[in-house]
Image (spheres, rainbow, N blue to C red):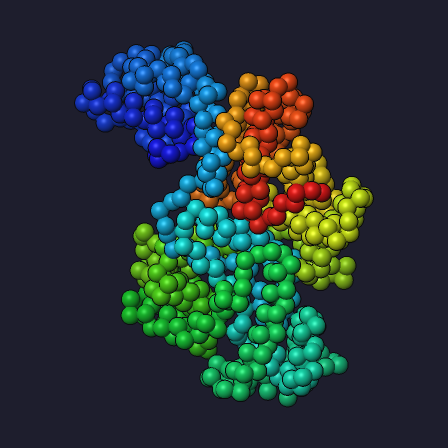
Length: 587
């Protein structure tokens, strides 16, 4: 239920109706059938359900509820019982205007805070000695937006970038580094050609006709043993690979404007010492079983194609560990060391069964128990125009940094055409905002569980549900104040009047900001906030087309409409910021 300072009219109305239902039911000596709801329409129609418990006509109950509310005259211009017992309610303009003023006075624009939880978000997760490609786009962008939103509403959020920095490939990578020489290898990697370095090492290890080397394979396998055994020199060389790779990751993150830093790195190697404990603890709990020579756990409810129980393998027959072991170690670490309440895994949809089994085994072991919870924030793929996994011209996965740089270049060309008088230096800054914003918004505005086709022309369009359209809506409002020659802050003391239908529609949409943010967080689905922001921009366009601002009929109306413009720009700016998108003041 909302606090007394809530600025969401539907929440305020819902709370008032809930209290009235409880009072009416209480007089009859029963508990009300209507439970707290954020939907005012559910409350308003609740008379039908309550009437059954009271044994009365629904209209009688609806009239009693309305009388209990005092006719709702303080917030509704009309409130009447219709049909078999529905409440038809219409907010009055003064009530809405007063709420708008409260939103304008609030630095948080009406977005409330919640009871704090410690939330760990696992996202991005590139691999050492491999360049980030387009497959890392969704996890990075979705994870970053969730971090921003959860932090904004008051949660204690820990970012964890679970990089792939451990395992058998590092034997061949370290030996290849030694073959090249540290200096040459460092130069090679620092230039960003991580993929080339990896492919050379893989070719030597796999033993193809030109580069195959049986001695190299022996050295690589021996190096893995040294690495896992803690050999100091091997660990130093491994750390060199990690550090050179993270330089590339950081360049991508900086260009994209995401919040991840070196402090957020939590690679697979960090859990190495916990892996034997996972096996020991599962064994003590009696959960381990043998299957084809491997140690496994059988969580209930999972079967293979033949209908046989499906195991989660936690230790291979040769004694090696795998991703399941590491993921269980992650759960232990995040719950027991970091005291997390909520674990969010922003990981592709194909990992759904694996993560579900990991979570269920963690619950069986008692490591993941209420009120703690783990959630797989699944997402679909980014597809090319052929509706297949997006790749570069060479057929390899498209490099992340190439995609972002091309977006900025294309945005620069588009802005130069749209506004040729912009100074070049200023245009370059705006192009960075628009290009990156376009990539992020195209991703975030798609329901995360769906695949989507990466379309340059559509995503960089200044029309439709796109990042540039919303950024341009913000810039257009800023231009109104430049033309008027006044500071935006000067109109924030004004309580708007809502005489026109378009003013009222815009006001209702502005007051729904808090509900949109909370709904987005509840479902971990950024596209819901994107939809709200687009609808707000659309409402503003209708308002601007029908309600003259600078040429309003008198000064009071002009000031009122300027106040609506300013508040719209602030909500657009804050909403896009929660998605990790910047808003230029001119385009």
